[in-house]
Length: 247
Length: 287
Image (tube, rainbow over all chains, first blue to last red; front, top):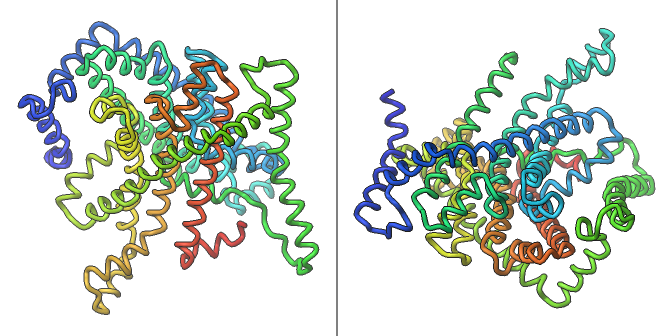
């Protein structure tokens, strides 16, 4: 308790500094509303449901996009590691698209699917797929040859081996790739909603900022930042639990 | 973002060298065949794009033909717009990246040498790293306006964390024996830092930078899209407002080329800087 208090004291100090600077009006109140005002307007927005409904649609987009990316990206990566022709065919394409700054796809997904959920889901799917693919690929390739040989000598079929040997040994790298994808999904979600959307966190931030209700805008920004952080921590827990079988 | 990501892409397969083929001719043929195989799927993709666009399944608005897109890039290049936009985007992304690289290493080093700095920055980094910091973009605009300063600031906010984290972890991981022996041979603090700790930590620091560089580009494009004006992102946004999808696709191709070139350049720099490190000899298999 005491230890974690000392550990997180800098954040408390920053919060106090924020409040004091804003209260003393060292900077203008529009640029930095006091933290207490931000928190009250955050609670107000939760009460009238604005934050919750926009948040739900944002999380829905991120969730569906990410789930598709994990499913298809993971399958693709394992297929590339397992069948040489797939690798030959897809590796150059992966290599070319991997460094593409994914945010460049925002206008295209809008051209294809409009302003609603579809374009954000497509963007998050496309943006998050490759880190998962590369994680799965590297993991599946690193499966120990000895394990593969012994499984084969014990008469495991190719498919059985894939499931019992290759997939488990791909797990650590795959989970790492998914963590990258998780962080990326938040970045893409917020940026695409900031640029074009009719609901969601990003839209709410933009609309509140345009209205001049800056304390509410700060509240949403902090909510998104906190959710991204919380998602990462929860994911780490799950990943640790998934890998519990390894020594 | 995970620090290993950048390294993973380097370990992608590039085909293994054939063993026991001393003749030059065979080697040449092999390289040629492998090269063709490597670009085959890319060419196939390009042809598929062109064919699909011409087949009429999609309207030209949804999918302009590749030839039309290339033509647009050519016109932009001749008129000079392409160069202005590219230069501005690169300027913003690279200035911000340089700030991240230097600032991140300095903060990381200070954190591993000074208890107080560590105490102050540790919770900020551990909470700030996984946050989607792009959400602070409207706040940055509120404070600094819509010009270069605010674009560079938001990129730095986003891309400095991987460098700090990588530096701290790298310095922590420097072998104790190395430091002890250097001390034993009479190295001063300064010499120790410059000649032992930094070189030994360099591989991981570079990995952090290899995460930060693509991130800088992603954020640069988003910031330009949101704030408008010149720059590749801004040009794409203007094109998309006028339903000019050929220019939007042209923008994607341009940004893709820049991203590819930057990532490759970074990998090259890594290989040159770390020429003494064992990973390079190990990577010699990977042309």
